Image (cartoon, rainbow, N blue to C red; front, side, top):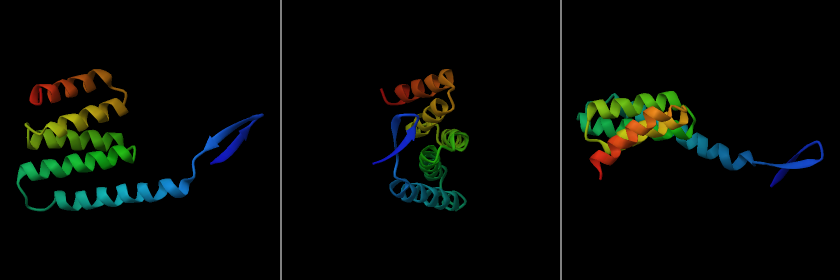
Length: 112
């Protein structure tokens, strides 16, 4: 592990060679999901793609896009539990805790 010195205290820094490939994978995945969303498929399958792209967006810290995708998933398939969960995760990332609680309550209602 590398260390960065600020005054006399060493602070551990991350080795970006391990992080960058993961970021690239999530970017590639998000692009693939975007392409697939525009295919002619059932709303339920499209909702799954929105959920998956929402996950990739959360990993890339694109929280507003993650929220949009979670909302689209729920619009397309109101019984999609993962859509509500992704909405909740995005709201947490955006520090909108009241909205996150509502989304997570929806998860609990659908999957007690």
